[in-house]
Image 1 (tube, rainbow, N blue to C red):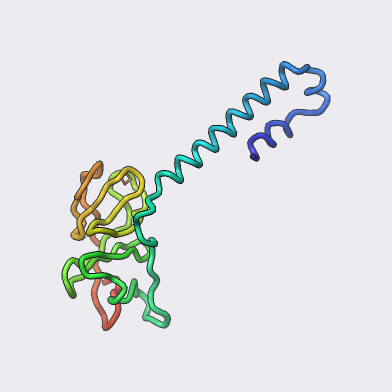
Image 2 (spheres, protein in one colour):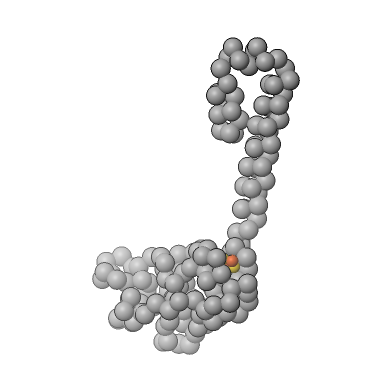
Length: 157
Ligand code: FES
């Protein structure tokens, strides 16, 4: 790990030899603590991600006009998708809604839409397809983003 390398690299050769094994051991133990902490943090971050959500984003269809977020066909009825920084939902056939893809609890990026809710990977908040809170700790609804349908595409309004 780089944290170990940086700690030992910063000690001049003559100082590490002159200080004796006690100092070297302390430096080693301190470096090992940083390494263990970094590994634990990495494992923790990995564990926070939800493997249940579908891939996070859709992209506009090739050749679509500027402002296109997604093809209407990419937004499932009774579900939704994340298109860049916007969550697009289609609660009922032909009715599209947009929201910022940022959780109102602590600002994490929402991870996806599954089983009828818009989900945050950080602390478990879930939002209904109309943006209202389904499950905390978030207490505020998602911020609306105006969207419109233009032909076969959902656009920012
Ligand atoms: S930031 Fe989304 S639940 Fe905490």
